[in-house]
Length: 312
Image (cartoon, rainbow, N blue to C red; front, top):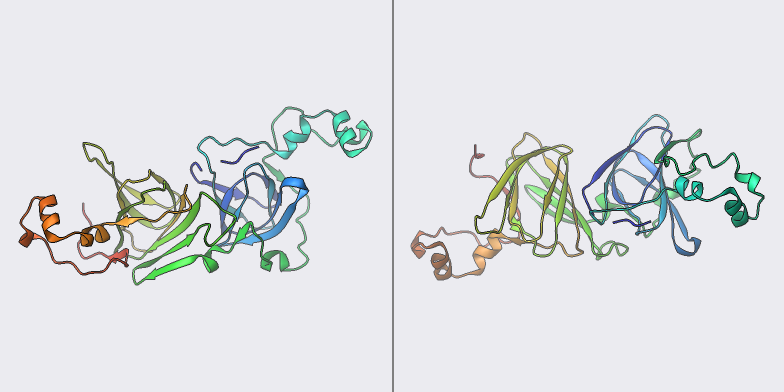
C-alpha cells in the first residue's frame, strides 16, 4: 500500500458512508471521524470538520467516516504521486483464506466463513453503515493530533487589503515533509501578481469564484496559455513557470493549492523589477532608461487591486 501528488480528488461521503483511502486532505463541508493505523499497531482517532486538514503517511491504513445521518461530508484529496497505488481493507482480508485468517486470530476457519464476502472481487471503497458512530464527547474534535491540522485557524496567514494567503508547511505542521499546502483568496477586481515558484510544482483546486489564469512556458516560443477557472476546476503549474491569477467575477475567488515541496516560496515580478538598476532594465527591455516607468518600492503586497480593465 503506497500513497503518492497527482490531481485533487473531490470525494463526497453520503450519509451512513464509510470510506477507506490514503490521502492528504482538507475538509470542505461536513464532519467526519478519522482513524489512522501505522507501524507496530499505533493508531490515532480524531474528528475533523470544515476548514481542517489531515495527513496520512504512505502505506498507513485509515478510514473516513461520516458522522451526520442527514448530511454530506466532502473532502478535497491530493495524493503525493502521479501514479498512486492502494489496497483496501476488504481486499486485504478477502485475499487470504479462512484458514490463514483463523490462524492469525487464533480462531477456527469457520469464524470467518460468513464474514469476508469478497474473494478477489470488487473492493469496498465506500461502505454503508447500519448505525452512525456515537461520538460521546467533543474531545475527538478539540484534542490535538499530529496528523490533524486546523488549517483555517492555525495556518500562517498573509493578509492584504485585496485578499489573503494561508500557508501550511513542515514549519507549521511538522508531520508533513516534502509537501505543503496553501489557500489563496482574491477579492473582486484584484489579481495575484505574476510570479513563479523556483522549486515547487503547483496543483490548484478552485473552491469558489471565477478567475483567469495565464501560464508562461519557458521555451523559445514563450507561449502564454490563458484560460478561465470556476468552482471545482483544477489546474497544474510546473516548477519555474511564470503565471498570474486574476479575479474576473463578482465575488471573491478562493483556491486551495498543493505543492510537491516543503518550500513553495515564489519570486514575484515586482521584486525582480526592483532588484535591478534602470540601466540593466533598459538594456534588458531594449529601451531608453527614461522610458521606464517609476514604480513604488513595495515588494510585500502580492495581491493587488486592478487599475486597468479586464482584457478581452
